[in-house]
Amino acid sequence: MKTSILSRRAFGLGALAATSTLAACGNGVGGRGSQLIDARVNATLNEMYRSYPNTVQLAQKSNGMLVMPLVTEAGLGFGGAYGRGALLVNDITVDYYSVTKASGGLQIGAQQYAHVLFFMTEDALMDFRRSPGWAAGADLEYVISDRGDSVAADTTTVLAPVLAAVFGRAGLRVGATLEGTKYTRIIP
Picture 1 (cartoon, rainbow, N blue to C red):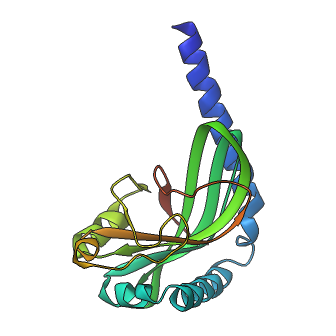
Picture 2 (spheres, rainbow, N blue to C red):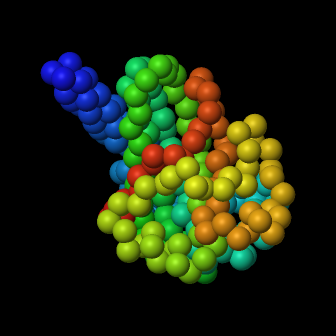
């Protein structure tokens, strides 16, 4: 029993340290606030639309999009991820968000990637905006596969309340999943 408590405490402290270290790095977004985030959001959307044309239609049908232009993820036993982005409704920035993630287990490496969440229903968007800290779960539908290939947006996919596109990966870490990722509103 004592070992289990110690292990959980060590995991929690390690995950907090990894996330705090990544947050302190600021991954190049922090210093100039909202203007830099907005510029990166626009560049990310342009790249996504150019590389994955099916996302243009998803953006038009969505009630809002959370755009995270640069998420830095690293791990050596314990890991974490951090990034900043913006929530767009009708192509207008309405709020800014940070993303954090902590993980533990057999892992080593670092990567950076961008991701966009498409809120396909008004309820999904309102649940996200009202939440003090929204966590992405396993129920996300991905519109860009692990290989980076675009997946066709069929009727089943478009009916999902939240769709995710993860792209632009660089680094030496396998896979990028949003499961267990927490989004929190910030003031840049």
